[in-house]
Length: 470
Image 1 (tube, rainbow, N blue to C red):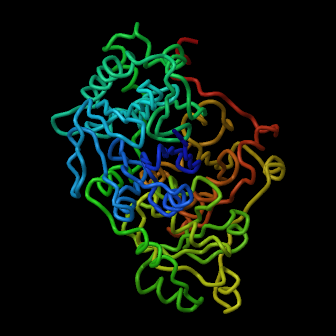
Image 2: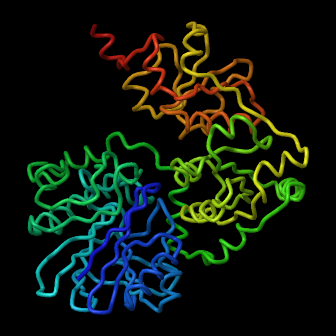
Image 3: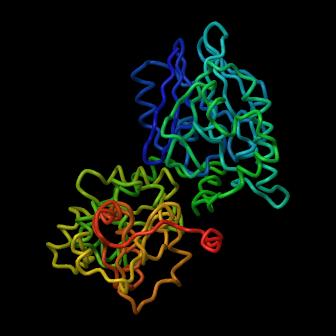
């Protein structure tokens, strides 16, 4: 028996490969099927099943393409009703892969169809659970993604409590927990950086598995402090449920090269968004006017999903040489299937043709310290939790995550200095403002990681109640 975790850091997502006696199963595969097909060919095994723990909201699964390419059956848990052929398993049903067995444990709460898969080894001993977004290391799944008119997040949290207490806690302590995500995912509040653990250790350390925690307190804990989900979540969940265009078609469309003048013409005729994925220093120095920066070397796909509100928006790509296919692939993982081509030769070809470029002003933390006064308008675009931990005393917090809902806070007559933690998010923020005609933003290089070393006054967040009591 072989069990392999295939972890993708950009999405903080874990897929799983299980192999036994010439047969294999894959759990929660990513969109692009080729890496899995290559693994199957290399190991000379047949893919028998593709198991889905639920309708994922934060990425588009590769289950449909993978099943079509191999003839494998797609397995979902109870209540799943997608628009394509699956085996809708019943609670307790078992599936054989070679000499091992997968048992279905229906664990609703994160979503109604959420299912945990229990792996039994060759001797029939319980070996591990693949818990999807039901149980993470250090946390459990958020209960607000499947809310309906007749189903609240409190209802779902109550279901998750019952799932944990009836299906997970009775299992042996020596089981290995293989979750669907690790730290960085928006599918839970406080996920660990660890990507596996024993169930016994989780029982001892994970608040959600504390047998002393009442159902009422569990629900309160789970539903307190949940940030709104990224806007692409329901769109990805729908694609996973209703189906999607074959990845090979999406890739071929996105890998169409355009010379500079044709690129400009296509951008104008299609009203495509120009997405610049190069490193941020190169974007700051020169870029196509109106283009948006989201660098491929950061958390690219989640930021695309959070910020580009139209998932069907035509996208034209500017990328470094040799990275176009990576960009198209990572766009497709979050459902952005309408990349229609790229700038052949990169920005240098644009410059060679004498076409107009733009730039974004930037200043080092040391230079900013020299000119700093309390009257300067400073935008901190980090998350609210980062801002509350510590920030520049005069900074205003407008998190990049919610820029689209906070544009009214931007004063066109002010000259802003923007920073994040390290410089990636603030360049995205500034590029979005520039694309909307607001060019009065200077990026602070290195972000708060470097500003913290300066003498500029800083403060911790103090809630109004605490301040009043003082």
